[in-house]
Image 1: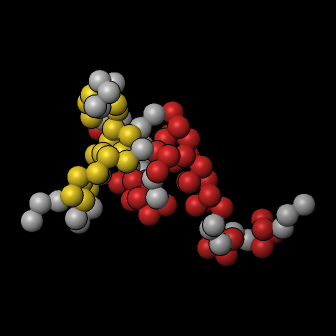
Image 2: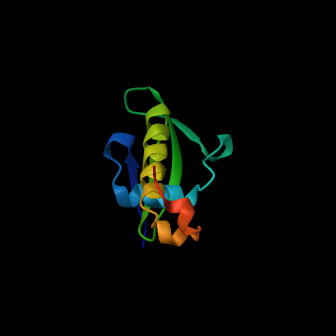
Length: 95
């Protein structure tokens, strides 16, 4: 069975796909990960491939995608329970 192929713009990326993206590239992506192709308008597009069980994605990247990933990771960090940090109680006191 062939996998579905989907191109996703950063504007339309779902939270679930963004989570998979950050899991697949925990330290970010580099030049070797990027695929460059021409779209139907003849414009060059940069994308990073990401595969799931049933779909091959090309996630369009750029400055806005980088910002979205950073914001997602910051939100994810904010969700960490302070008790999980294993800090002494004094460190948890907020002024």
